[in-house]
Length: 489
Image (cartoon, rainbow, N blue to C red; front, top):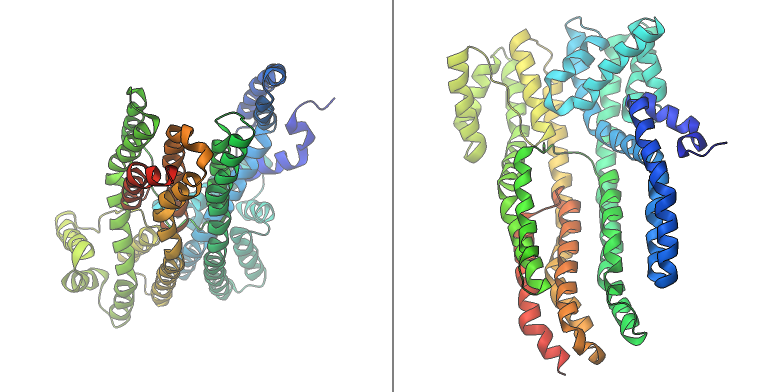
Protein backbone atom coordinates (compact mmCIF):
# COMPACT_ATOMS: atom_id res chain seq x y z
CA UNK A 1 0.00 0.00 0.00
CA UNK A 2 1.42 3.35 -1.05
CA UNK A 3 1.12 5.48 2.06
CA UNK A 4 4.13 7.69 1.39
CA UNK A 5 4.04 10.57 -1.07
CA UNK A 6 7.40 9.43 -2.47
CA UNK A 7 5.75 6.13 -3.43
CA UNK A 8 2.85 7.90 -5.10
CA UNK A 9 5.33 9.90 -7.23
CA UNK A 10 8.05 7.27 -7.37
CA UNK A 11 9.12 7.94 -10.95
CA UNK A 12 9.41 11.69 -10.51
CA UNK A 13 11.13 11.38 -7.13
CA UNK A 14 13.74 8.96 -8.56
CA UNK A 15 14.39 11.38 -11.42
CA UNK A 16 14.78 14.33 -9.06
CA UNK A 17 17.12 12.39 -6.77
CA UNK A 18 19.44 11.41 -9.62
CA UNK A 19 19.37 14.89 -11.14
CA UNK A 20 20.06 16.70 -7.87
CA UNK A 21 22.35 14.10 -6.31
CA UNK A 22 20.36 14.19 -3.07
CA UNK A 23 20.89 11.65 -0.28
CA UNK A 24 17.88 9.33 -0.67
CA UNK A 25 18.37 7.68 2.73
CA UNK A 26 18.43 11.02 4.54
CA UNK A 27 15.24 12.17 2.80
CA UNK A 28 13.57 8.84 3.64
CA UNK A 29 14.25 9.42 7.35
CA UNK A 30 12.85 12.95 7.12
CA UNK A 31 9.73 11.65 5.38
CA UNK A 32 9.17 9.04 8.10
CA UNK A 33 9.28 11.76 10.76
CA UNK A 34 6.88 13.98 8.81
CA UNK A 35 4.50 11.08 8.12
CA UNK A 36 4.45 10.23 11.83
CA UNK A 37 3.47 13.82 12.66
CA UNK A 38 0.96 14.38 9.84
CA UNK A 39 -1.97 12.23 11.03
CA UNK A 40 -2.02 13.40 14.70
CA UNK A 41 -1.74 17.01 13.54
CA UNK A 42 -4.63 16.59 11.07
CA UNK A 43 -6.82 15.00 13.77
CA UNK A 44 -5.98 17.79 16.24
CA UNK A 45 -6.86 20.52 13.73
CA UNK A 46 -10.10 18.73 12.79
CA UNK A 47 -11.18 18.58 16.44
CA UNK A 48 -10.22 22.22 16.97
CA UNK A 49 -12.31 23.23 13.94
CA UNK A 50 -15.40 21.96 15.75
CA UNK A 51 -14.77 24.67 18.33
CA UNK A 52 -13.75 27.30 15.75
CA UNK A 53 -14.26 26.77 11.97
CA UNK A 54 -11.29 29.01 11.21
CA UNK A 55 -8.99 26.16 12.22
CA UNK A 56 -10.01 24.36 9.01
CA UNK A 57 -7.60 26.67 7.16
CA UNK A 58 -4.77 25.04 9.14
CA UNK A 59 -5.50 21.67 7.50
CA UNK A 60 -3.19 22.89 4.74
CA UNK A 61 -0.29 22.33 7.15
CA UNK A 62 -0.52 18.51 7.42
CA UNK A 63 -1.19 18.30 3.68
CA UNK A 64 2.02 20.23 3.00
CA UNK A 65 3.91 18.04 5.48
CA UNK A 66 2.68 14.89 3.72
CA UNK A 67 3.79 16.10 0.28
CA UNK A 68 6.88 17.93 1.59
CA UNK A 69 9.54 15.66 -0.01
CA UNK A 70 8.12 15.72 -3.59
CA UNK A 71 7.49 19.47 -3.31
CA UNK A 72 11.00 20.05 -1.91
CA UNK A 73 12.64 18.07 -4.72
CA UNK A 74 10.50 19.74 -7.39
CA UNK A 75 11.31 23.22 -6.02
CA UNK A 76 15.05 22.44 -5.90
CA UNK A 77 14.91 21.19 -9.50
CA UNK A 78 13.15 24.36 -10.70
CA UNK A 79 15.66 26.50 -8.83
CA UNK A 80 18.59 24.52 -10.26
CA UNK A 81 17.36 24.93 -13.82
CA UNK A 82 16.91 28.66 -13.23
CA UNK A 83 20.49 29.01 -11.95
CA UNK A 84 21.89 26.89 -14.78
CA UNK A 85 20.20 29.15 -17.34
CA UNK A 86 22.55 31.91 -16.17
CA UNK A 87 25.65 29.76 -15.57
CA UNK A 88 25.68 27.78 -18.84
CA UNK A 89 26.57 30.68 -21.20
CA UNK A 90 29.62 31.45 -19.04
CA UNK A 91 30.55 27.77 -18.85
CA UNK A 92 30.17 27.47 -22.62
CA UNK A 93 32.71 30.26 -23.07
CA UNK A 94 35.07 28.54 -20.61
CA UNK A 95 34.69 25.23 -22.49
CA UNK A 96 35.40 26.97 -25.81
CA UNK A 97 38.54 28.60 -24.44
CA UNK A 98 39.70 25.27 -23.00
CA UNK A 99 39.07 23.35 -26.22
CA UNK A 100 41.19 25.90 -28.07
CA UNK A 101 44.16 24.86 -25.89
CA UNK A 102 43.43 21.12 -26.07
CA UNK A 103 41.25 20.53 -22.99
CA UNK A 104 38.05 18.48 -23.14
CA UNK A 105 34.58 19.06 -21.72
CA UNK A 106 35.22 16.99 -18.58
CA UNK A 107 38.31 19.07 -17.81
CA UNK A 108 36.20 22.21 -18.22
CA UNK A 109 33.64 20.82 -15.78
CA UNK A 110 36.38 20.18 -13.22
CA UNK A 111 37.77 23.71 -13.66
CA UNK A 112 34.33 25.24 -13.14
CA UNK A 113 34.88 24.91 -9.38
CA UNK A 114 37.51 27.67 -9.67
CA UNK A 115 34.80 30.12 -10.76
CA UNK A 116 32.49 31.33 -7.92
CA UNK A 117 29.67 31.93 -10.41
CA UNK A 118 29.69 28.34 -11.76
CA UNK A 119 28.92 26.36 -8.62
CA UNK A 120 26.05 24.33 -10.05
CA UNK A 121 28.05 23.46 -13.16
CA UNK A 122 30.93 22.42 -10.88
CA UNK A 123 28.57 20.01 -9.09
CA UNK A 124 27.90 18.40 -12.44
CA UNK A 125 31.52 17.27 -12.56
CA UNK A 126 31.08 15.37 -9.30
CA UNK A 127 27.85 13.85 -10.66
CA UNK A 128 29.63 12.78 -13.85
CA UNK A 129 32.48 11.14 -11.92
CA UNK A 130 30.05 9.48 -9.49
CA UNK A 131 27.93 8.01 -12.31
CA UNK A 132 31.00 6.82 -14.24
CA UNK A 133 32.31 4.95 -11.17
CA UNK A 134 28.94 3.49 -10.19
CA UNK A 135 28.03 2.27 -13.69
CA UNK A 136 31.63 1.51 -14.77
CA UNK A 137 31.38 3.58 -17.93
CA UNK A 138 33.57 6.25 -19.48
CA UNK A 139 33.30 9.92 -18.59
CA UNK A 140 31.90 10.71 -22.04
CA UNK A 141 29.03 8.24 -21.46
CA UNK A 142 28.44 9.82 -18.05
CA UNK A 143 28.19 13.25 -19.71
CA UNK A 144 25.61 11.78 -22.12
CA UNK A 145 23.58 10.54 -19.14
CA UNK A 146 23.64 14.00 -17.54
CA UNK A 147 22.47 15.40 -20.89
CA UNK A 148 19.44 13.09 -20.71
CA UNK A 149 18.63 14.16 -17.14
CA UNK A 150 18.96 17.84 -18.08
CA UNK A 151 16.86 17.42 -21.21
CA UNK A 152 15.05 20.68 -21.91
CA UNK A 153 17.18 22.97 -19.74
CA UNK A 154 20.20 25.07 -20.76
CA UNK A 155 22.85 22.56 -19.65
CA UNK A 156 21.13 19.66 -21.41
CA UNK A 157 20.99 21.61 -24.68
CA UNK A 158 24.67 22.52 -24.33
CA UNK A 159 25.72 18.93 -23.65
CA UNK A 160 23.68 17.64 -26.60
CA UNK A 161 25.19 20.20 -28.99
CA UNK A 162 28.68 19.35 -27.75
CA UNK A 163 28.19 15.57 -28.00
CA UNK A 164 26.77 15.92 -31.52
CA UNK A 165 29.80 17.95 -32.61
CA UNK A 166 32.19 15.38 -31.08
CA UNK A 167 30.53 12.56 -33.05
CA UNK A 168 30.82 14.70 -36.18
CA UNK A 169 34.52 15.36 -35.48
CA UNK A 170 34.01 19.14 -35.34
CA UNK A 171 34.36 19.90 -31.64
CA UNK A 172 35.57 23.50 -31.91
CA UNK A 173 32.83 24.71 -34.25
CA UNK A 174 30.27 22.74 -32.25
CA UNK A 175 31.28 24.57 -29.09
CA UNK A 176 31.20 27.87 -30.94
CA UNK A 177 27.61 27.10 -31.96
CA UNK A 178 26.77 25.99 -28.41
CA UNK A 179 28.07 29.26 -27.01
CA UNK A 180 25.94 31.24 -29.45
CA UNK A 181 22.84 29.24 -28.57
CA UNK A 182 23.45 29.58 -24.82
CA UNK A 183 23.97 33.34 -25.07
CA UNK A 184 20.82 33.76 -27.16
CA UNK A 185 18.78 31.65 -24.75
CA UNK A 186 19.98 33.61 -21.73
CA UNK A 187 19.15 36.90 -23.41
CA UNK A 188 15.67 35.75 -24.38
CA UNK A 189 15.07 34.34 -20.89
CA UNK A 190 16.00 37.65 -19.33
CA UNK A 191 13.68 39.52 -21.65
CA UNK A 192 10.86 37.11 -20.77
CA UNK A 193 11.36 37.89 -17.09
CA UNK A 194 11.16 41.61 -17.86
CA UNK A 195 7.79 40.97 -19.50
CA UNK A 196 6.58 38.71 -16.68
CA UNK A 197 7.64 40.99 -13.82
CA UNK A 198 4.88 43.56 -14.40
CA UNK A 199 2.23 40.81 -14.36
CA UNK A 200 3.63 39.41 -11.10
CA UNK A 201 3.55 42.84 -9.48
CA UNK A 202 -0.04 43.50 -10.57
CA UNK A 203 -1.26 40.18 -9.15
CA UNK A 204 0.71 40.62 -5.91
CA UNK A 205 -0.49 44.13 -5.26
CA UNK A 206 -4.09 43.14 -5.98
CA UNK A 207 -3.88 40.41 -3.35
CA UNK A 208 -2.11 42.55 -0.74
CA UNK A 209 -3.88 45.88 -1.29
CA UNK A 210 -7.44 45.14 -2.40
CA UNK A 211 -8.23 41.83 -0.73
CA UNK A 212 -7.41 43.07 2.82
CA UNK A 213 -9.99 45.85 2.48
CA UNK A 214 -12.67 43.35 1.45
CA UNK A 215 -11.80 41.06 4.36
CA UNK A 216 -11.91 43.94 6.85
CA UNK A 217 -15.41 44.81 5.65
CA UNK A 218 -16.41 41.14 5.90
CA UNK A 219 -14.98 40.73 9.41
CA UNK A 220 -16.80 43.86 10.64
CA UNK A 221 -20.16 43.03 9.06
CA UNK A 222 -20.12 39.41 10.23
CA UNK A 223 -18.47 40.12 13.60
CA UNK A 224 -15.95 37.39 12.78
CA UNK A 225 -12.45 36.81 14.08
CA UNK A 226 -10.22 39.91 14.11
CA UNK A 227 -7.44 37.96 12.39
CA UNK A 228 -9.44 37.71 9.14
CA UNK A 229 -7.86 40.83 7.53
CA UNK A 230 -4.44 39.22 7.91
CA UNK A 231 -5.25 36.09 5.88
CA UNK A 232 -3.82 37.51 2.59
CA UNK A 233 -0.42 37.72 4.28
CA UNK A 234 -0.31 33.92 4.02
CA UNK A 235 0.13 34.38 0.27
CA UNK A 236 3.45 36.21 0.75
CA UNK A 237 5.70 33.07 0.91
CA UNK A 238 4.12 31.49 -2.24
CA UNK A 239 4.47 34.81 -4.10
CA UNK A 240 8.14 35.06 -3.11
CA UNK A 241 8.73 31.45 -4.18
CA UNK A 242 7.02 32.12 -7.53
CA UNK A 243 9.26 35.15 -8.10
CA UNK A 244 12.34 33.15 -7.08
CA UNK A 245 11.48 30.35 -9.50
CA UNK A 246 11.04 32.68 -12.48
CA UNK A 247 13.91 35.04 -11.67
CA UNK A 248 17.31 34.80 -13.38
CA UNK A 249 20.05 34.35 -10.77
CA UNK A 250 22.22 37.35 -11.62
CA UNK A 251 23.56 37.81 -8.09
CA UNK A 252 25.08 35.53 -5.48
CA UNK A 253 24.82 36.51 -1.83
CA UNK A 254 26.19 33.95 0.55
CA UNK A 255 24.41 33.76 3.90
CA UNK A 256 26.55 33.08 6.96
CA UNK A 257 26.77 33.50 10.68
CA UNK A 258 26.76 37.29 10.45
CA UNK A 259 23.17 37.09 9.18
CA UNK A 260 22.18 35.99 12.68
CA UNK A 261 22.34 39.65 13.63
CA UNK A 262 19.02 40.10 11.81
CA UNK A 263 17.42 38.25 14.75
CA UNK A 264 17.82 41.55 16.59
CA UNK A 265 14.74 42.70 14.69
CA UNK A 266 12.63 40.25 16.74
CA UNK A 267 13.51 41.89 20.08
CA UNK A 268 10.93 44.73 19.74
CA UNK A 269 8.12 42.14 19.91
CA UNK A 270 8.96 41.71 23.60
CA UNK A 271 8.30 45.41 24.34
CA UNK A 272 5.02 46.35 26.11
CA UNK A 273 4.00 48.79 23.37
CA UNK A 274 1.27 48.73 20.69
CA UNK A 275 1.70 46.08 18.00
CA UNK A 276 2.10 48.56 15.16
CA UNK A 277 5.02 50.22 16.96
CA UNK A 278 6.64 46.85 17.56
CA UNK A 279 6.30 46.11 13.83
CA UNK A 280 7.76 49.50 12.92
CA UNK A 281 10.79 49.16 15.21
CA UNK A 282 11.30 45.61 13.96
CA UNK A 283 11.27 46.72 10.30
CA UNK A 284 13.75 49.52 10.96
CA UNK A 285 15.99 47.14 12.90
CA UNK A 286 15.86 44.64 10.04
CA UNK A 287 16.81 47.33 7.51
CA UNK A 288 19.77 48.51 9.60
CA UNK A 289 21.09 45.00 10.23
CA UNK A 290 20.88 44.29 6.48
CA UNK A 291 22.74 47.49 5.56
CA UNK A 292 26.22 45.86 5.20
CA UNK A 293 24.82 43.26 2.80
CA UNK A 294 22.97 45.97 0.87
CA UNK A 295 26.19 47.95 0.43
CA UNK A 296 27.87 44.75 -0.75
CA UNK A 297 25.19 44.34 -3.43
CA UNK A 298 25.69 47.95 -4.53
CA UNK A 299 29.44 47.39 -4.92
CA UNK A 300 28.73 44.28 -6.97
CA UNK A 301 26.41 46.24 -9.27
CA UNK A 302 29.02 48.96 -9.82
CA UNK A 303 31.68 46.38 -10.65
CA UNK A 304 29.26 44.70 -13.02
CA UNK A 305 28.56 48.01 -14.77
CA UNK A 306 32.28 48.56 -15.35
CA UNK A 307 33.02 45.08 -16.75
CA UNK A 308 31.78 45.51 -20.38
CA UNK A 309 34.19 48.36 -21.16
CA UNK A 310 37.07 46.63 -19.37
CA UNK A 311 36.48 43.33 -21.21
CA UNK A 312 36.25 45.13 -24.53
CA UNK A 313 39.49 47.01 -23.95
CA UNK A 314 41.20 43.85 -22.70
CA UNK A 315 40.12 42.02 -25.86
CA UNK A 316 41.43 44.77 -28.13
CA UNK A 317 44.76 45.12 -26.32
CA UNK A 318 45.26 41.35 -26.10
CA UNK A 319 44.51 40.95 -29.80
CA UNK A 320 47.35 43.33 -30.76
CA UNK A 321 49.85 41.60 -28.48
CA UNK A 322 49.55 43.28 -25.07
CA UNK A 323 49.24 41.13 -21.96
CA UNK A 324 46.37 40.87 -19.49
CA UNK A 325 48.23 42.73 -16.75
CA UNK A 326 49.02 45.72 -18.98
CA UNK A 327 45.34 45.92 -19.94
CA UNK A 328 44.34 45.86 -16.27
CA UNK A 329 46.80 48.64 -15.47
CA UNK A 330 45.11 50.67 -18.21
CA UNK A 331 41.71 49.84 -16.67
CA UNK A 332 42.84 51.11 -13.27
CA UNK A 333 43.85 54.43 -14.81
CA UNK A 334 40.56 55.04 -16.64
CA UNK A 335 38.13 53.58 -14.08
CA UNK A 336 36.62 55.69 -11.34
CA UNK A 337 34.82 54.99 -8.07
CA UNK A 338 34.54 51.45 -6.74
CA UNK A 339 35.92 49.76 -9.88
CA UNK A 340 38.90 52.13 -10.12
CA UNK A 341 39.81 51.53 -6.47
CA UNK A 342 39.47 47.77 -6.94
CA UNK A 343 41.71 47.60 -10.02
CA UNK A 344 44.38 49.72 -8.35
CA UNK A 345 44.36 47.25 -5.45
CA UNK A 346 44.58 44.40 -7.98
CA UNK A 347 47.68 45.91 -9.55
CA UNK A 348 49.34 46.27 -6.13
CA UNK A 349 48.44 42.68 -5.14
CA UNK A 350 49.68 41.36 -8.50
CA UNK A 351 53.07 43.03 -8.06
CA UNK A 352 53.39 41.64 -4.53
CA UNK A 353 52.25 38.05 -5.24
CA UNK A 354 53.28 37.62 -8.86
CA UNK A 355 49.77 36.60 -10.00
CA UNK A 356 46.31 38.05 -10.32
CA UNK A 357 44.40 37.69 -7.02
CA UNK A 358 41.18 35.69 -6.68
CA UNK A 359 38.09 37.91 -6.36
CA UNK A 360 34.49 37.23 -5.42
CA UNK A 361 31.58 39.67 -5.61
CA UNK A 362 27.81 39.45 -5.55
CA UNK A 363 27.71 39.70 -9.37
CA UNK A 364 27.87 36.34 -11.19
CA UNK A 365 28.89 38.09 -14.41
CA UNK A 366 31.82 39.82 -12.73
CA UNK A 367 32.91 36.63 -10.96
CA UNK A 368 33.05 34.64 -14.17
CA UNK A 369 34.67 37.41 -16.21
CA UNK A 370 37.40 37.81 -13.61
CA UNK A 371 37.94 34.04 -13.44
CA UNK A 372 38.34 33.95 -17.22
CA UNK A 373 40.81 36.84 -17.10
CA UNK A 374 42.89 34.94 -14.52
CA UNK A 375 42.78 31.84 -16.71
CA UNK A 376 43.99 33.79 -19.75
CA UNK A 377 46.76 35.34 -17.66
CA UNK A 378 47.96 31.91 -16.45
CA UNK A 379 47.74 30.10 -19.79
CA UNK A 380 48.59 32.97 -22.10
CA UNK A 381 45.60 31.91 -24.20
CA UNK A 382 45.16 33.79 -27.46
CA UNK A 383 41.45 33.03 -28.05
CA UNK A 384 40.06 36.40 -27.03
CA UNK A 385 37.09 36.68 -29.40
CA UNK A 386 34.77 35.59 -26.63
CA UNK A 387 35.96 38.34 -24.33
CA UNK A 388 34.23 40.78 -26.67
CA UNK A 389 31.20 38.46 -26.78
CA UNK A 390 31.16 38.29 -22.99
CA UNK A 391 31.39 42.07 -22.88
CA UNK A 392 28.26 42.29 -25.05
CA UNK A 393 26.51 39.70 -22.87
CA UNK A 394 27.17 41.63 -19.64
CA UNK A 395 26.14 44.89 -21.32
CA UNK A 396 22.87 43.33 -22.53
CA UNK A 397 22.14 41.95 -19.07
CA UNK A 398 22.77 45.35 -17.50
CA UNK A 399 20.49 46.98 -20.07
CA UNK A 400 17.74 44.46 -19.32
CA UNK A 401 18.08 45.14 -15.59
CA UNK A 402 17.77 48.88 -16.17
CA UNK A 403 14.75 48.30 -18.39
CA UNK A 404 13.16 46.11 -15.73
CA UNK A 405 13.66 48.68 -12.98
CA UNK A 406 12.42 51.45 -15.24
CA UNK A 407 9.20 49.53 -15.93
CA UNK A 408 8.75 48.75 -12.24
CA UNK A 409 9.28 52.34 -11.12
CA UNK A 410 5.52 53.06 -11.00
CA UNK A 411 5.11 50.05 -8.71
CA UNK A 412 7.89 51.36 -6.50
CA UNK A 413 5.86 54.52 -6.08
CA UNK A 414 2.84 52.34 -5.35
CA UNK A 415 4.75 50.46 -2.64
CA UNK A 416 5.65 53.78 -1.03
CA UNK A 417 2.07 55.02 -1.30
CA UNK A 418 0.57 51.76 -0.02
CA UNK A 419 0.41 52.96 3.63
CA UNK A 420 -1.84 55.85 2.57
CA UNK A 421 -3.86 53.69 0.16
CA UNK A 422 -4.52 51.09 2.86
CA UNK A 423 -5.29 53.80 5.42
CA UNK A 424 -7.74 55.45 3.06
CA UNK A 425 -9.47 52.17 2.19
CA UNK A 426 -9.82 51.00 5.78
CA UNK A 427 -10.31 54.36 7.44
CA UNK A 428 -13.34 55.34 5.37
CA UNK A 429 -15.31 52.44 6.84
CA UNK A 430 -17.06 54.13 9.75
CA UNK A 431 -17.84 50.86 11.49
CA UNK A 432 -14.16 50.05 12.13
CA UNK A 433 -13.37 52.96 14.40
CA UNK A 434 -13.31 50.65 17.38
CA UNK A 435 -10.66 48.49 15.71
CA UNK A 436 -8.15 51.25 15.03
CA UNK A 437 -5.34 49.42 16.86
CA UNK A 438 -5.82 46.37 14.64
CA UNK A 439 -5.91 48.60 11.59
CA UNK A 440 -2.63 50.23 12.55
CA UNK A 441 -0.89 46.87 12.77
CA UNK A 442 -2.47 45.76 9.47
CA UNK A 443 -1.22 48.89 7.69
CA UNK A 444 2.31 48.28 8.98
CA UNK A 445 2.24 44.57 8.08
CA UNK A 446 0.94 45.08 4.54
CA UNK A 447 3.42 47.88 3.92
CA UNK A 448 6.22 45.48 4.78
CA UNK A 449 4.77 42.75 2.52
CA UNK A 450 4.46 45.01 -0.54
CA UNK A 451 7.97 46.38 0.01
CA UNK A 452 9.46 42.90 0.19
CA UNK A 453 7.74 41.84 -3.04
CA UNK A 454 8.93 44.89 -4.97
CA UNK A 455 12.50 44.48 -3.65
CA UNK A 456 12.59 40.84 -4.67
CA UNK A 457 11.22 41.57 -8.14
CA UNK A 458 13.38 44.52 -9.12
CA UNK A 459 16.40 44.45 -6.79
CA UNK A 460 16.74 40.63 -6.61
CA UNK A 461 16.88 40.79 -2.82
CA UNK A 462 14.21 40.56 -0.11
CA UNK A 463 15.37 43.64 1.79
CA UNK A 464 16.05 46.84 -0.13
CA UNK A 465 17.22 49.03 2.75
CA UNK A 466 16.23 52.53 1.46
CA UNK A 467 12.78 51.40 0.30
CA UNK A 468 12.05 49.55 3.54
CA UNK A 469 13.12 52.50 5.71
CA UNK A 470 11.09 55.01 3.69
CA UNK A 471 7.96 52.85 3.37
CA UNK A 472 7.88 51.90 7.07
CA UNK A 473 8.34 55.54 8.08
CA UNK A 474 5.54 56.59 5.71
CA UNK A 475 3.36 53.89 7.25
CA UNK A 476 3.99 55.37 10.70
CA UNK A 477 3.08 58.85 9.40
CA UNK A 478 -0.10 57.48 7.83
CA UNK A 479 -1.07 55.75 11.08
CA UNK A 480 -0.39 58.76 13.28
CA UNK A 481 -1.80 61.56 11.13
CA UNK A 482 -3.73 60.25 8.11
CA UNK A 483 -5.76 57.41 9.63
CA UNK A 484 -7.30 59.44 12.53
CA UNK A 485 -8.72 62.04 10.11
CA UNK A 486 -10.43 59.29 8.12
CA UNK A 487 -11.87 57.35 11.03
CA UNK A 488 -13.53 60.51 12.39
CA UNK A 489 -15.16 61.58 9.15
